[in-house]
Amino acid sequence: MWKKPWFTQLIVFVMLLGGIPVYGSSYTVLDNILKKIIDYETEPLASIGWRESALLPMSYSDASTDGAYLGEAMKGDYLAPNSYSTWTMYQQGSICGAGADSALGAVLTSGQPNISVSPKNHNFGIVTRGGSSESQTFTLSNTGTTDLVLGTITISGTNASEFSIQNDYCSGHSIVPSERCMVDVIFSPTSSGSKHAQLSIPSNDPEIPTLDVALIGTGIDDLLGDYETGDEEFKRLEIGDSIVYFYQRMIDDAIVERDFIVYQFDRATGELIDRKVHWLSDLPEHITIDITKEQAESMVMGEVQFTEMYIISPDSDVFTLDPTAENPCWVVRSIDDGNTIVTIIDAVTGEMLGHGVPPPEGGFTLSGPWYSNPCSGAWTAWYQNAENWFNTMGYPTEAVEWPTETQVKSHIQNPDTSLFYELAHGSSTYFASGCIGGTDYEYTYSSEIGRCTPFLGHF
Image (cartoon, rainbow, N blue to C red; front, top):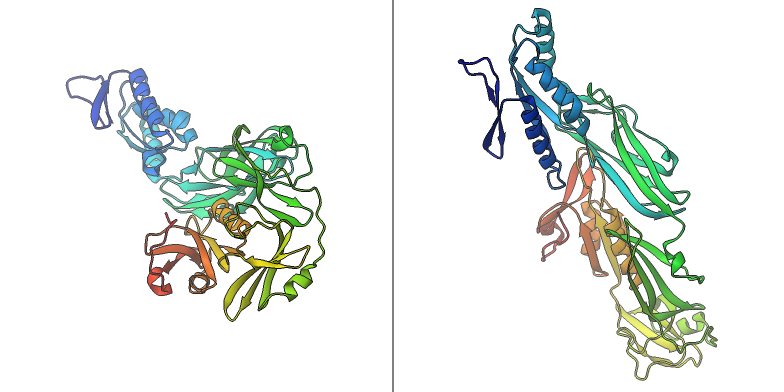
């Protein structure tokens, strides 16, 4: 706050920093104090909207410098370009002249929109040429006092063609004060090297007519190029800050149980973090079988669900045979009288070797929406990663984004669903699974779907 003592014509600025008043008698001191506050508030943890505001109480001081003009200069030079909202309290005086006084007062009291974006920039990290990154959601907020009218959002800059907008809930919309909207962007490099572009957001904000958000990414030919020279087909996954490449060993059409190669790279730098290999060394390059898939399926009881050929590991936890099968085996899963049966048949001799541990019938993964009013966003990488691992373990899985309560209920109350993953806003007794009318969360309650245990994975 400020005050102008009756006993002097010098202005004394008083600012509160953490509740402690700090006094300065020069504009340089005031600028330094303001800069420290801004530096503090722009730390990563200080992302709460109300902290990105500045109070500019000014009085006229002398005939050469008007406090209101100083406040406007601070707002235009630093606060507005960094997406800060401002509140102003200006004392009117005769220094600016009668006409200027009236015009300035009208501007300061009429209100205006103020655009803010989070995050203020984004580095998509390293993405293989020809591939695509996970989408990044940018949230636009109106921290002003009148409606923010948005134009058509575009991508511009040197490498604009290698970035693209996926979901745009903002272009052409009006955002009332304190509300927000979202737009998603992905990075799809067509060549190697560092890439730069801007997300250009036009609006009726008088101080920032077009807000540019820096987009950065790096395209590479292949992270595995320095480590793998064979023809193995690795599956690429993005998990948190890591890029993971997974290869399940196959010999012809047979899955080699528990044999795999996994590489984990830092998503931002491309540095190799970890490499794991489990590889039996005494296996042939090719296999020969005498029993066809159809013959194996004809040997089991019940209705066949699926059939795969395996080379069974001596350390298997699923196919516990003693001794371990020497030949490739057909593993046939069937349903007989409501019971799941896993039958192991030697693919060379046709001998029925035993039974495996039956897995759950299936899995279900979901993500609720990030935001409401309007609904947008999802924890895509997480729920799709769960789907991938459920399927890899042999459990057919359905993955749904924003499912209705009816969909969730149909899976949870189904005895065939034993693996369930959800990530959504909520608590231990409910979560926001879907969206009603494009604006409101649709909640799923444990009391309504007959679930006795708490939900996990909510926010």
